[in-house]
Image (cartoon, rainbow, N blue to C red; front, side):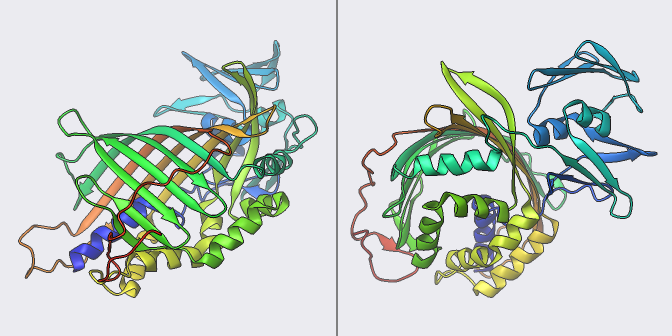
Length: 426
């Protein structure tokens, strides 16, 4: 069913965002410590590069506060105060001349990149031919670079085969059909998640509770996965089984990588994960290192293109779906215009080096064309083009290290949508 294919693609996009190119500012590129920064918001004012204050604090790990027309950037005990429209800033009580005044427009604060970066010990260089700004700084905490700290955190986590996750996120949602806002579609979604992960042997169980509005009852979705099958239970339905999207060889490879901290960090770099320190913080009496990370989605896609295709083929392999090649073609069209801006923050416990708290902020903009519906099987009016914009903010906590894994009870006769015969989860 062509209509069925359309919604399978939509589901795939909502759950797997490996292949979405990032929002890009093509006029000026930005590089930090040799890594390209995804989604830089930059522009040139004659010969001065202006950067959004939000972008700067993300790439540097600084904190930003606003009080009227005054913008204050704080990092490692240093404070820089800038005033909208004023060509002078205050650094540690001393005046600093600015080549361009800070500017706030459409809710975005722009500051001169070189002066602000120099104030916090970055070396700044400019490549005219490539239109590339490069920042370099060797920042450590207790003698560790960000990736060295991650390697130690990975090593500390190896002694635990299981852990639990609890969290929530809020999503602002905008859906447009053929260029018109779908007024009846939900505008906000609140999601609570709780679950457990086991590394060896691999098992994953997650319960999601979605709240769309007061008028719509809470929806509960369960998902369980092991090395052979994926199981899903939708609201009001029984468990369904699907083929495992990833091969046993893939899970073995991932376990090998995670057992070697150096390999794990190398994989993060290959995937385009850019990491920097934020200001240390204390939460509930515990001291934390803070790591900020962003995804270079183009690089991420290059590293996992084959894996992504494999997972999409598994999603489309059921008898009710069209040829997986057609799904791949649909995905390719979506990838050409899709946008993703994804940042997250990890709080690493200074005593245990375990990542107790993870916060994330993601913006997605997806546009897809709908294949011609099978009018012989439906009288519904289906839009030719759908555009979905998300703005997601959430937080997860990690607990239950080493506790026994608790799998859900799944009937042995659960329906396998990839086969006509019942299957077993044993």
